Image (cartoon, rainbow, N blue to C red; front, top):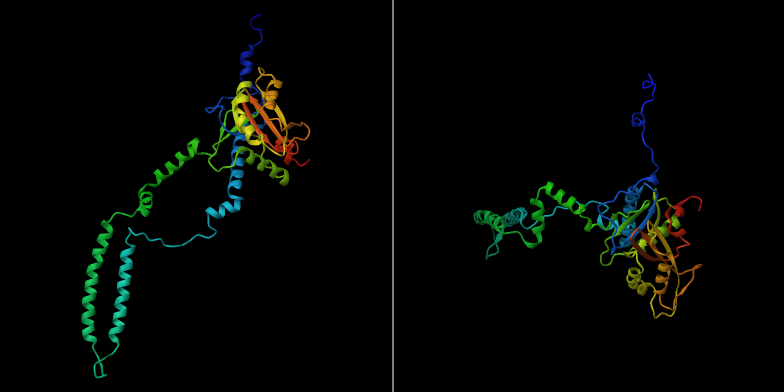
Length: 355
């Protein structure tokens, strides 16, 4: 009797209940392409648990602002690639039968001209008009027969001759099936090395990294991020739902004092030249995530000492801000302008209606 009055075990009661977790409590799932040293791109903060949606939004935004910087504006880039009205022109190639058709049309025009000339009267030596139409008709028939015999020869010669160099690509694409063309295009889109922007796994909650495959002549991450943030500050147009801050990363290395001092040298030479008549004021911003083994002041001092002496530190109104972001074992460094004036490059804060 005592055994029957025992309550049921908790295992059976917990099966029907669904476990509820907050988004920031989720474990970050490691992706196939983790963040690594030696890449350029953008370190972006977002809402916790919305890393995948934020990555998709970031890829679309960065691609649009990249096209705007390269082509000037959206309308300008479209006008260069797509005409306003379709060009309904018939293109005839040398390796097709169109040339033989043109020969036939030319032969018909010549026949009509000869017929008109045959109808005209001819003057003899004495100045009298003579009618020589029967002889001209016979001569015209002979010429027409000769031309008709030459037309198949021309057509046969054009069919046997190989296509010219200008039309080789057109012939290859014409003979290739549509399925293979679609597969080639999908294969090209799936190749990550041919994309401008690719998302990488940062390893931290609420943070994503978008790598940029920079080609010769392309704008850098700093130019694209500054274009995005400045346009958001001017237009107040809502651009994203999950993205918070967009920080350019021009140098990525391992998070150690020696590696940071070595990797930051070309960046310092670019933005803080040694021989200059107008020295700049700079500040160092340091943030670390999922890394407690590095001392904050040691990294800040290492970055500040790498800047040459004509330039001075000013934390209130700096001309340039050196942003140092550490995510686990990777350090990302970028140099930006008007960091505080542009709400610390916070896209949501710039587009909020309160500002």
